[in-house]
Image 1 (tube, rainbow, N blue to C red):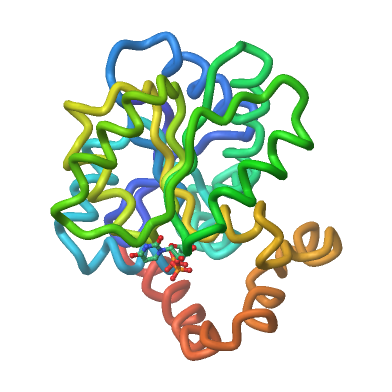
Image 2: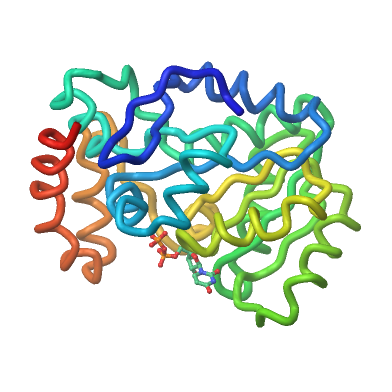
Length: 243
Ligand code: UDP
């Protein structure tokens, strides 16, 4: 279990880590001997976890690292008077972690998203990151009864770091269900990251990211997310008043 300071938002743990501290924690996981779970929640996932005991327990008690992904959590922590120093977006953390794997000669497995996406993401990452070894990839649309063969495939690849993009909480439940048989040292739940690395979806331009408006860009790109927009101010108010 991590020894970071944490802030509880709606009863859900978020680690007060900087990008550099999160990466250092990841480096230590690579030298460990068990599969550690990294959760990268945004406000929406924290809200979901506040209402879902199973997910909340995993985040609060089982995860080795819970990064603050998104300005919603930064604002909520400030309103609580217990500010998180900086946003650590899951996709940025994962990219640095993959770069570190390349430097250290460790390999990566990409699991999730629609058929063809993980493969395209693997090809792009290998092109962009010198020395990177993608040990394997697989789409995220497999049946429950195929799960153990998916785990075997990941283990047979010899990967050290598992990127899981099945959406939350499916990705966190998958890792916890199989953590005793998974041989990877770290597994991170990464939502739509493979879609972005594959080129299927665009990351927000720097202006949006730098001004805390990445959520707005995502709304424009994926209008289905619009229906979740009214939840954000309510989230902040609830987070601020709940001790
Ligand atoms: N996904 C998957 N298997 C599933 C459901 C979703 O691989 O059974 C993938 C989906 O293709 C997408 C990613 O999970 O690449 C994140 O999905 P979504 O954006 O719906 O999740 P959220 O933003 O809620 O985490």
